[in-house]
Amino acid sequence: MPELDPIQKRLIAEIADLHEVPAGAYNFRANSKLAGRNTTANIDIISKEDGTGIDVKIKPGTKNESVHIPVVISASGIKETVYNDFYIGEGSDVVIIAGCGIDNCGRQDSQHDGIHRFFVGKGAHVKYIEKHYGSGDGEGKRILNPVTEVTMEEDSSMEMEMVQIKGVDSTVRTTNATLAAGAKLLVQERLMTHGHQKAESVYKCELNGDGSSADVVSRAVARDDSYQRFDACVIGNAACHGHTECDAIIMDNGNVLAVPALQAHNVDAELFHEAAIGKIAGEQLDKLMTLGLTAEEAEEQIINGFLK
Amino acid sequence: MLQIRGLTYEVEEMGEKKRILDELDLDIKDGKFTVITGPNGGGKSTLAKLVAGLIKPTSGSIILDGEDITEMSITDRARRGVSFAFQQPVKFKGLQVFDLLKLAAGKETDLKFHDACTYLSEVGLCAKDYINREVNGSLSGGELKRIEIATVLARGTKLSLFDEPEAGIDLWSFQNLTRIFENMRKNITDSSIVIISHQERILKIADEIVVIANGKIKQQGEGTDILSAITGTPDAVMPCVKLTEV
Image (cartoon, rainbow over the protein chains, first blue to last red):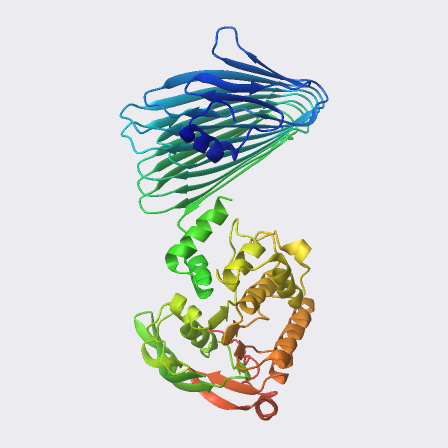
């Protein structure tokens, strides 16, 4: 494992399920510094000259390789903005695992704003996994504002898993995508907020080519006094298919605002949205209680399953 | 043994009290396959829900193996050996068939894939096609019913209640379901199985049949005797009343 302290190692395990050095390419960033890097014959990682981030270059035709780029912050008061660009060569098929973990035991806020740009080449397939996690009992907040910009060339496809389950006080997640003909984007977001946390997810998908499709699905749980806003906009500029879905469970005083927006500029665009917000159905609790679970155990199982 | 004494359940409709169950007394013996039948609206499902604890009675008592469970929660009754298959199986987003069977079997059992496979094959489902499926609207009514029954099998408790397993499924699925209940009837030991049903094929395999109408027991006795007594009567099917202009 690169030079990481025990807290940083725990954060890495939470966000990337990594307990040792991963196979393939990686770039570890800890408290705003490079903590380890590996490149492969097909995947190069280069620091930007101005020191603001990295360029990840994946050669055309690269198959079955992965890139881990975890970021951890274990010191209080760090505020950083990082620009990472990913160039995914034509016809490649790769997995990119990002994620940020912040442990803040201090009084000052810690903040990581990661701006990721993806340029997905023709026919390439990318699976992108991003997990956010916060811990520490300091007064300082744990803040994450990721921006993801995706440019998809013809017949490329991208699956994005965005997960934030615990401990992040404030987040504004912005995702913008433009899709050429035949490109396919699938986004699955899993979000749970608790305490006084605030989380906003803003998506804008522009379907510019015939046969392109975007499917943005969010499952969210808002507990305690937390607030969430899901704002998903799909714009159909061609013969395309777009779908957004917000499915939220509210508990305690949780507050969820779903703002679906569809805009069709082409008569052959087919755009749909679904949104449902409500508490856990009483009959679901009853069913699990007839299996011998207590009401609390039933609730936990329902939430765990919902966010799986 | 399940003993029901003076069980009454009232609801309020349009400001008036309506009695769904009316001081009902009933004994369900161990080792028996009992079918409760009778016209719709007679109180059969209400009785099953009261035993499972999903609703609370207005008065009366429910005694399981000598212990009064009337005031117990759903959970406590389940832990004492009451299982209940819902008439309308509940759907869950995210929970998979294997998750549900694991929960049904309990923490102590630590259900494995091959155990789940056994329960699913008993209800006519091939595990490899279903074990990782979400228990949601992508499953048909018949599939959900079978999974519901499999959760009761996985529990393996003393008292298993099935609320109209035939409701909402197609004829083909029903014919398969009757085979499941025939098998359960064969393998019954000291546990009791109670099925609420209108179906003759289910009634035919009953050790005991209880006919409930208007919140009371109308007839009760050995399966063959009661079946011949009610066949072709309004007790076996819902009476049809010709509508007239108001």
